[in-house]
Image (tube, rainbow, N blue to C red; front, side, top):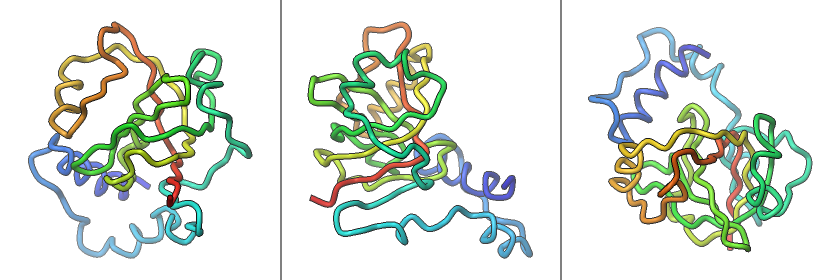
Length: 174
C-alpha cells in the first residue's frame, strides 16, 4: 500500500498544482503496485451509475438534506448520502461541492487523493460515501480551489466548516 501512496499522492498533488513534479514507481515494483491497486471502479459501472473509489460499505443512501442539515450527528463515522454536484475540480476531479434539495452544500475531497471523478459531473446526481470532518477554514486552500475552477465556497465566511472525505462516489449517467 505504501508503494501506491508513494506513486499516486505525488501525481495527484502535481495534477492539482501542489507538487513540483510527479514521480514514478521504482523499477521492478510495477507488479507489486498493480497487485495493491484498488479494484477497477469501471467494472462496477452500470447503465445508471458510474463509480469511483472504493466499493460502498454503507448499505443504503440517505437524502442529502438528512445529513447536511446536521452534519455533526454523522461525524467521524461512515455516512452515505445523495445530492447533486454543484462544482467539480477542473484540473483533476479531486474535489467537488455537493448540494442537497434544501440548498445545503458541502465540499468533498477524494480520500488520500487516490481517485478523481469526471470533471463534467456538474449538475449530475451523485451518491457519495465517506467521513464528515470539521476543519478550520484555510483562506489559502480556498484560493487553491478557486484556481481549479471553484466559484462556490461552502466554507466562505466561516472559521470552521464541514467537509466529506469521500471513499466512494457514484455519478448518475443522466
